[in-house]
Image (cartoon, rainbow, N blue to C red; front, side, top):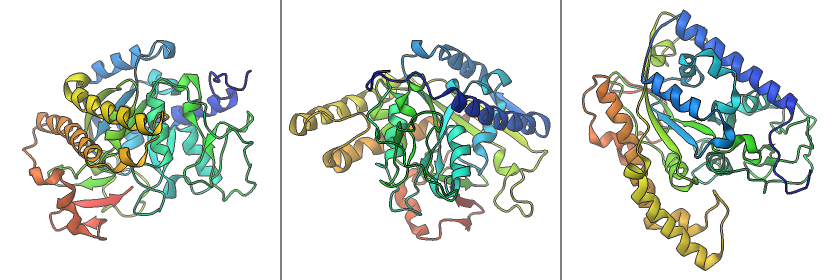
Length: 374
């Protein structure tokens, strides 16, 4: 293989491991959702049709983003138990998620499990100086959604850490060089480097933390989802979702054994229609493209998912992210209304509303809700 020739896929053993992990976890979740709980799904047929259209990797024209409210620590993977078994054993057509670095990637065993399970290591700003909107994992997510592969990753030999306490990881069945770092020190497989990962599917919980509210109200949405929508090329398909029931199976007030979901609850998953991307986000993407063109005239061409300071922090860039994020939230609110819930307090969608929490972000609240940082 020529040095610059993009690899078709990770090694066969890595793919087999990923199929095993994704398939096994999904089957366990299906057993819980279908066997130990009552469940219902709305719009699933339309969503499965969309996944069917994406089976041919070479024929994919764009990535896929699913976005939903966040009601329990087990939302992902529990909600994917609603999918038929045949969809669960094909990692090439399954979701990629964002997992907390300090919970899911603290040692080599956890790093291996979650990486095989198609979870990207994500730093939380409340727990790490490397968190935030511009961390390298968001770049990976943007590239996964785009027309890859992107092979300009770390090409140095992987410094295989011998300690099992190290989170460092690479595909051990290859040269281990197609990696990226989340903080300049660690090493993880770079999924966007492979042809079979182009135009992937990413699921995101924009609230960024669990919110279990008696009325199923949502917190404000963080701006990471806006980066995925504005910067991926071409614009991904976007499907809003609404989930209910996992908050009962894994309520934050649960006692021992906390790690086990409670059976006998009702799980409801609502898949919305695929959004008309041009109608909903077209004007924002055109303004974003204009901003990028202006900055590239000044500083030169930028790689996909990489921004200069102006594109990170200028007033117009900030406003575009705010507006994009609010439109995503409104799409999910429409599903909430379809499920029979009343209108939310409009202030619930504003970050300013939640600043009064200060450092008291987690636990029971005066309004009867519970929150948990994830």
